[in-house]
Image (tube, rainbow, N blue to C red; front, side, top):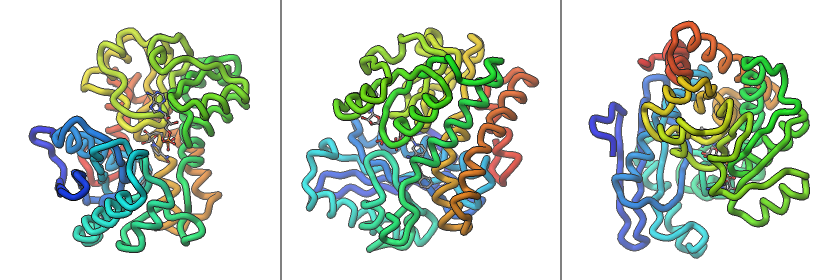
Length: 346
Ligand code: NAI
Ligand code: PHE
């Protein structure tokens, strides 16, 4: 839990039957209802679950603002007593039913969507019990997975970073992708098409087998932060780069999809001091929000959404230029840009 968290509201509920702690955080509703995905995972304790939800909701506010989307930031965390794969389908359905009830009680101030360990199929289930759901499957009338658009945006951010570093393109560069799930796998094929050498790490044997079939190199998940590369792309979970990792990470740039990859307040300054370029995550990974909110709220077509996701590199470039000019870390620069596009203070 963050002391003196400045967000709008944190709602919690414990269900004794399933042993699940539910948390929904509304960081801001100044620009519109708070929106952000539902994350289902195990946390050490209730305070860690709340802190994660609060930090993730804050990132969503910035993401919506920087893209000019008419939503605030929110996030839900379903803190599971056991790993997701150990739940029976009956237990999971009961958990989703309670989550839907919690969302419905917020009366439209919070809209959810898919996030880590929740899918479009889960959104279809939630949508049976609450209206406030983005990202249902196409069969159920939604716009389906946001991962391809997210990968498109991260790719655009990576290309902008290559240009900023004076490389021109990613051709011949080494890109290390941590996590080749829905976004990471798509990103890998995009950067491979650009001529980059791709290295991946993932605990899933099936995902690694597929990566090897595509000709990517593989490193163990424990070697990710010590393997030299040109671009490190965190596409698994957040909180992986603290100040000590930032001081040693053998990369020239960090550009990925994971929300909140920086674990503490000084990591971005440490990276900047070493000349390691950090693409602010809430800009680089905003393609998913553009897909869900753009298509389902604003009525944009797929082409419009893709054009905007492909344009995220321009916002990244603006953040790099502002950071250079003002001698501030790139994520601070991106916060200023977000503040200039919304009612939310930096
Ligand atoms: P996913 O669940 O499909 O993929 C995550 C991958 O990371 C899996 O293959 C998993 O095995 C792997 N992984 C887990 N722990 C790992 C570790 N220690 N080292 C290496 N790999 C590990 O998730 P998805 O949709 O690809 O999202 C990836 C990240 O991007 C998440 O943090 C998510 O919040 C963020 N994100 C996703 C968006 C989307 O549209 N899907 C939008 C914005 C952010
Ligand atoms: N969870 C994704 C993200 O972090 C996608 C999402 C965007 C879900 C907006 C709901 C609302 O961006």
